[in-house]
Image 1 (cartoon, one colour):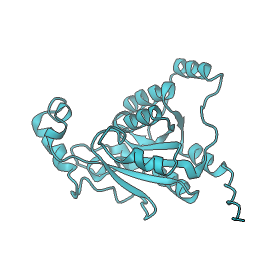
Image 2: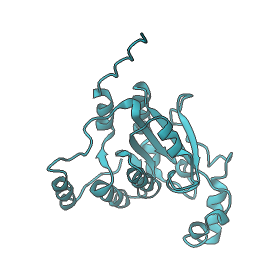
Image 3: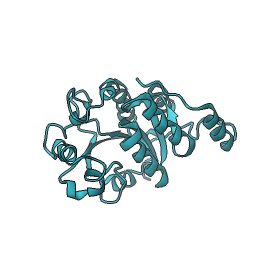
Image 4: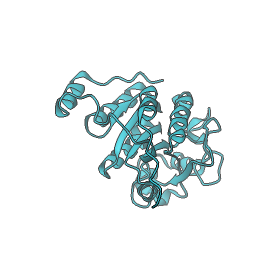
Length: 236
């Protein structure tokens, strides 16, 4: 996994702002928690793919552990698939930040129904989980996906974020979720980037302003330690 390091100066600053606390959130309601699994697709994970993120293959067991914990406690797992149809749908990204051939290749890789678009086979996805396409880095960007509607309808207040890239789609998702009023927890060892430096750049920015940073073990413990919800009283 990436070696996650939070700069001591940044840590001291956000602890001071929180009255000495390391974490903003020390309890969760599992039934109101969603695990957002970002872009764990063949196009990012298989060896030899143009957009391969080698570390993404190594975080699969941790993502599965978080998903099992969320599922077993009545929460929601949402698996997002980065989806592209044409460079013209997002020209400032595909045509300005990439060479034409590379942009065209990325669009071809993540066409709906293609092998690259599909979720990686190592993920434990069940019929109880949600699979949702998104057309921007963040599923919360207007018209990117129905994520906000889904989470609102399910009365979700807390999101756990895992997947790839830490410093791109995962960071964008975490930032937007917090701005929309969700309690955000980034699962640090269940996120993958191209390097420790890029991973930690995102982690440090998120820790300062947007999200709690937790390991898989800590995130699962939060779910396991949450009290069981009382059964509703019978109608009289």
